[in-house]
Image (cartoon, rainbow over all chains, first blue to last red):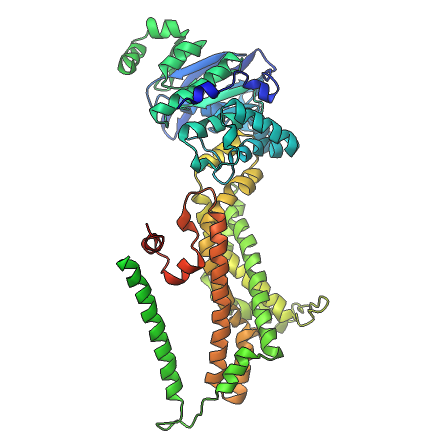
Length: 277
Length: 299
């Protein structure tokens, strides 16, 4: 698979340049707590992500890292704390002088999600649509741009992720790596201010991981603000501005990749890294 | 390959058995052993090959009523399924109540009660509907059609719900994360995928619907069965007319079987499941089980 070489060096050009977030701090999570029933999965999690920053979240399975990024676009509810994206409180309205959270209307939540791209572990492409249709679906029906405009952008995106030839192909005829690249293109087509990646390479065969990481690296280089939950330490070392280590619902440690990988200060980080490196 | 011959063999045995039964039935009324009846082939043949106006009318009524009632049923079924799965509890209660009542009571009871009770008690008079040339649409046809549709909706609700639940939750999450509203997610992402699961049982439902329109007999709607029944009881030529009636119903359900196979093939696109839609040939020759299909497919 020589796909990585086909990935263009101007990914964000396809959507008209780097979407510029309104605020300097794109994600501001403060003291987020979440329970699944009696299980306390997020304990006072506070993370800030600045514009054009790439944050990689690592940690053992069950540590709450996936749950955390799912809270950022309100696919999961939180019980306390606040998550701001671009300065807007996500998923809730404050009442009682800022002491109480009331879930926001479905329409408002949907509008907030337009600014947040998400890439899933299992791709979740729409199987009843071709690759191109997958990409242009939301721009047309959510953003309301014209079909012609969407097609031009969709084709450009497909070309930049090296899959121009697969325009009319249905997802089930594509490899995992190809599907994930289209899923990334689909999320980018909404021109999001922030991209969330939930273990984007965990469901892939080893030989396909490279082509997906290549697209993600390119995105990072071009200045996309990204939060990536991943076990790909090589990727983290190469592109992350910051690595966040989570365990048991708590942010154990954070710092530059060098700090966290070469000189971890916490025992739990050392234990985790010794298992996977 | 030996297997497939076996399967087709079973079908042939079934067909032979059916023909034998028909032969017995005919022999039973062919004049010997005390029976005085002479089977009048010309009545059956005429009712099949040159049906008169009332038979044609009955045929169209059966087709028309079953299509309208089924469409109404599908629409109601989608809303009832969404209501049943809603996060808003009053919707859940209304949907559950509707499904519970209409699935839990006989259709013939619903037809008789809902049509006659308001009339008898002078609660209301059903209006007569006549749209252009379709002035045969008396109130019994329209109201009966509506009741059949409402009844069907209760069954479709469960089928639609099963279809929606068969769609990977990841699809909803992907749609939501792209900023789609609940309505967009349902109409553009979930329901089109649920359709693939819904369509095979929907085909069964419509097959039932074609036959169940005969219950409109109780409202004196002259659809296919009532028409033939009327001939039979006035002439006492029961076998003659009802065998022709069997032919017409079999024709309708067989044509529907072919249409259904075509629809299922169309909706299997992008799923990689070639067995999701059988060709008419596979449908006729196999019993529709996966192993039969695999054999017929030559795998």
